[in-house]
Image (cartoon, rainbow over all chains, first blue to last red):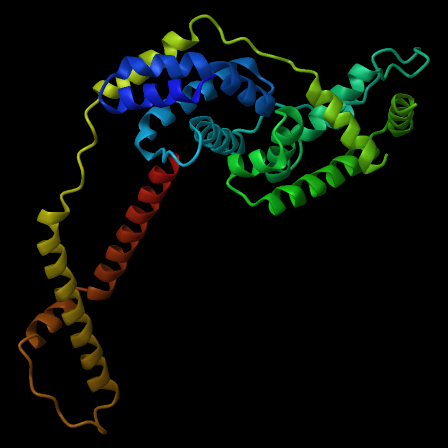
Length: 193
Length: 127
């Protein structure tokens, strides 16, 4: 994705050519929808949120100061929108007790396979308080480094690091409280070997 | 479970790239809303220039009434200590206002102002 293409399209839009927005949408629809999906784990909602993000970006295009890359600005705007949307209407989650139910209790490992454990961890992340969930989602699930996550969230790097640490602490406590904690632990140990 | 283990699990989950492909009509749908937005006339701004003289006059009147009210109350409570004040031009207005229940009117105005401020805040938070 070329920064110069973005800049050219933005200039066209600011000059009154609305159709130039299409280029921006085509280039960034995938990343923005995927970012939204990592926040809400719902495809339909992810597209709705991404559409709203593009609309807001169009409205706020004049506000893009070219000192930062267009992508940085767009991601910060989208992250901000997704976070407030999910604070307003939280993502649909199931309780961790339901997640921990083994699929097949006769299975040697109690049915808690790697997939189940990953699902439990994902659900546990969704159940975290918003500020920790946002940091963990950007850092782990969207592959942003601390610096990029801090820019997207409009926070300092130190705050993001602290939220990642605290988020992991809460997550660990939650997961340890699972009724299947020993099996969960075993699954983790198996992976470590 | 140690933090390192959790970090490793989270990193592994994150590395399993679960890519969502945008639905075929997504771009068209975004462009529709962008075009709709572009053709919508901008909201009419509040006519501050026209409203300003009225607002200023209202504020001055309010300050005057309040001053008179304070003076009036002071006169009633501290009458023996302070010398009689000259009868101002506002005395008849103040008396009429007090008869009409200025306190209630003032309270109603405050409540209206609070509700306007609250609704403005709520709408600005949504947009």
